[in-house]
Every structure is written in structure tokens, then in C-alpha cells.
Amino acid sequence: MTYNILILGASYGSLLGTKLLMAGHNVTLVCRKKTAQLINDRGTEVLLKLSDEASHRVIRSVDLPGKLNALSPDAVDPTACYDLVCLAMQEPQYGAQEIWALMTRIAEARIPCLSIMNMPPLPYLKRIPGLDTAKLESCYTNPRVWDNFDPQLITLCSPDPQAFRPPDEAANVLHVGLPTNFKAAPFGDVAANRILTRLDADISAIRLDGQDVPVKLRVFGSVFVPLANWGMLLTGNYRCITRSGSRCIRDAVHDDTARSQAIYSYVNTIAQQLGASRADQVPFEKYARAAEGLHKPSSAARAIADGAAVIERADKLVQLIGRALGMNNPEIDEIVALVDEKLRENQRQSA
Image 1 (cartoon, helix red, strand yellow):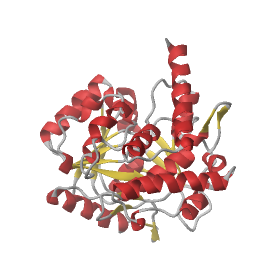
Image 2 (cartoon, rainbow, N blue to C red):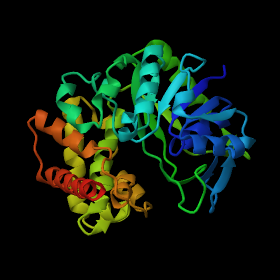
Image 3 (cartoon, helix red, strand yellow):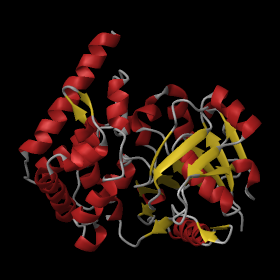
């Protein structure tokens, strides 16, 4: 069976989109009109390094068996033919009027949604027993975007692969710096899980010139598996933001490894208090090794450096969940306070 998959976000979303196209599925990328025209004219290019090769391969969508097209948000009809929606935009982008309108149409069409955002959608969090999501709404740019979604039809995928748009390239090019796997929690819906399991198998079977291709979609049985990403975000990504500017993820993690490990362990303890097992989580040592190769600032740090007035606030989300569990940590409080300060500065400058 060939699936038709709608991906909101043509930057990071083009990585998962490329793997789906390689597996023979059809992909529609949702993006700005100008970017959609570029993609429809020239396709996408993903620069990806195979495990046994020293340089990156350029994987072009025009050479792949699946069909790709791109649309602006207002041109998308979710009732047309889509089997799955992938949410690959930054959380603040969903508050834009045309995206919010599209999200409402997707919710009404009851299409299963797989999020590859760092920020978990509110309906996904509603699937975690004992978590009062009403107290977490302040972490979201527009929490009302998520009101109409069925929690059983939305799940989260830990976006562990690291990728970025090279500044000197066109908007249809993505460079993959860390080709790790997407790790998905199951849906609460049986039919939606069948789609997810099939995509896992199809992507795993991909070969390029006889070689295995990294960046798999791995589906797990636990709803808590994507929470392993929280420790990475709080230890590395948000700590790329400093008062004097941005630093790369490697330096954020390795400038003081003992401090980083303490933050990482604390965040993992929050996930365990929610119900995660140790098997759902990634050991600090494994994350620290991966961080050694991350020589660029995180997307959050780059956004703040570029003057963004809003960013994804997974840092604040983890802080509030910890407090709800009776847990407080001065390191986390310091991270949240600094991000708040930097965003206020940007807001004042843009006013």
C-alpha cells in the first residue's frame, strides 16, 4: 500500500519526507507559497552521510520512487486523500492564522497526526495519566490550536536527528548533521498504529547502492519514549543560550560535564515520575558522545540570536511539570529565567 502523507513544515520535515519518498510513499509538504513553488519546480535536496562514507550524499526527491508536491496552507484540503499528517513546524508557527485554520480542518477530518516537534502537542500530553494539561497551557504560543484534536489520534516522535538549512543554499536544501533515528510513541488508535508500523518497516528496508540508509522511524510500545528528548533539550539545546551570545551544543554539554549530567539526570527523573521506565530513556553517556559532533548552536539559540520574540518553550514545560510533581531544580529555573530574559529583550527591540 502506498500512503499519502501531509507534512507541515518543509525544512526539518523534508528529512522525514525524503525517507518516506525513498520508501515509495507520496508526500505533500506544507510551506510558504514561495518555497512551495521552488519545491514544485526543483524538488528537495537532503545532504545525508551514509555510515561508511566520509562525505555527504545529495538525495534529490526527483530521483525517488515516491511523488512529492508542496502546497501553501490555504491550498490544503485534508479530506482529499491523506492517511497521516506529520507536524514538523516549530510550535509558535501553529498560532499563525492560516496554520491554525489548517489545523482545525485536520482535526475535523480525524487524520492521525505524528508530531516531530521538540514541543509535545497538548493532546499527546493528555494521554499521560495524572498530568493536568490545563496548568501547562502557558508554555504554548496558542494552546487553543489543539482543542479539537482527539488525543488517541495524535502521538509524538522524538526528533533526535539534527539537521539545518545551510545559510548559503536555497530553501529546498537540508543538511543532516546527526543522522540518528526518529523514535515514535504509539497512537491510542489501532488503525493509526498499523500505518505507523508499516512506515517503520518500509523505511528500515531502504537501501542506497546496496547500503543501509540512516535515519529510521522506530515505533515503540511505550507512550513515554519521546520524553527521553527532554533531557537532551534541557542539557544541550537551551543551554546554547548564554548572556554573551550563542554557543554550540557540544560546548553546552561538555564545558562542564558533571553539571550537564546532573541536569540530564534530574530531567530523566521527571519523566520517570510520570511513568517512564529506564528502558524508555537514553543514557547520558550515549547522549554526550553524540553531542561531541554537534558543532552548531541549537535552533532555539539561533532563533533568539536572530531576534525571535517567541520560540518553543520545552524548558518551561519541563519546569512546570517538575513543580506539579513537587520537584524543583535551580539549574532548570536559571535556564528558564535566561530564556525569558532574552525573549523580553527581543520583544522590546521589535516593538
